[in-house]
Image 1 (spheres, rainbow, N blue to C red):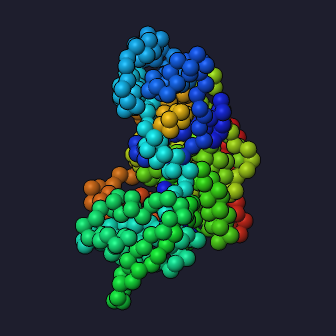
Image 2: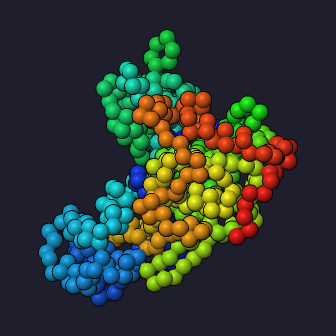
Image 3: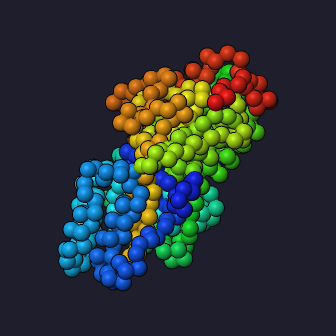
Amino acid sequence: MTDPSKFRSVWQYKLVLRGAMFTGACLTTLLPIFASSTLAAYKDSPKAIVDEAWQIVNREYVDGTFNRLDWQRTRMELLKRKYSSRQEAYLAIRSTLKKLGDPYTRFMDPQQFQSLNNQTSGEMSGVGIRLEANPGTGQLIVAEAIENSPASKAGIKTGDIILAIDGKSTKNMKLEGAISLIRGEIGKSITLKIARGGNSPFDIPLTRAQIEVSSVFSEAKQEGNLKVGYIRLSEFSSHSSEQMQKAIKDLNRKQVSAYVLDMRGNPGGLLQASVEIARMWLDNGTIVKTVDRKGGNEDFRAVQGALTQLPMAVLVDGNSASASEILAGALKDNRRAQIVGTQTFGKALVQSVHSLSDGSGMAVTVAHYYTPNGTDIGHKGVTPDVKVDLNSLEQRNLADSPALMGSTQDPQYQRAVAVLQNKPNLASPNSGKAPAMSSNR
């Protein structure tokens, strides 16, 4: 059991759905195809990158009017300019994309694009520790050593204090700075100075490796007469569906009698991951509908593959976005779960991600999506069945101490449990089944 911090292929690229907190991810991408004459004319010129970006938007952007821009004229103006560096070209691309009025269609320089790749892959280069800063002392503390990582194999434990990284003191060091120092090239060594209990500090040498980051945390909780399978899903990465499958099967073996799926703060991720996870909870019905700029639509449906029919509640909040909203909307519209919490973010757009020839990249909005009932949640979000607001103190407590999520000090979780406890005819935990809650859509 691990604690988190966190495609369907269409036209040969993967679709990404991210919302309020776009924090980088990893995708298989498609190098753009454009005229050989353009390549020849602009080879090794910053203009080549500018035209690559223009071509991708021209082919795929969801709004065929390009926000009422003359897109062909825009290209002519871009290619008339002289660019003395790639940075000037990048600036021109960003300035042009802003005119589309879509914050999700954006350009990423090579470093930003690599960061995107690293996150959505659900993998990172490092030693496999999750850090937290003690709000009182400022000390950097190991919140978790990921299973089978270099850190766990070397004996690093939850609660260890990181005093130095490669000889550099962590005193007054910000969490982001420490993470940056610990991550690095696979195969390269690093030494952490550790304080543990009242013992003298000691050094632990480690070798960086590729680490699979868990986006799923699961636990069986006894809540009165109800044994709850609590699952927290922090992001939809390329490993999320397999991690979710493992969590559900493990909790089924523990004979839970109901589920709480917690997607609060989940900013989204890969479309295919959300579809695959929805299919683990639904036997029948539509999951999501997408519509591109030509009016072409595609329905993603359940395929009789649900791993459980036990009653469930889903926790959401204003930072549950995009792929989270797809899953919540699917479970709500198919009457599979009660949605508990606050209104979600309201991002109903689908992006494709492309690499450009110099290592930079672009995310381009290519479609709108709708819930199974045909609801457009754009700028509105998914409305909970049971609304539970948190006051400022409760919000701060959960933000400062994520371990309190899913506990007696978490009012939204407690309300979800109460909703499940009030459901009649809960299934016997031995059966793995509950009264049918999925509609035959």
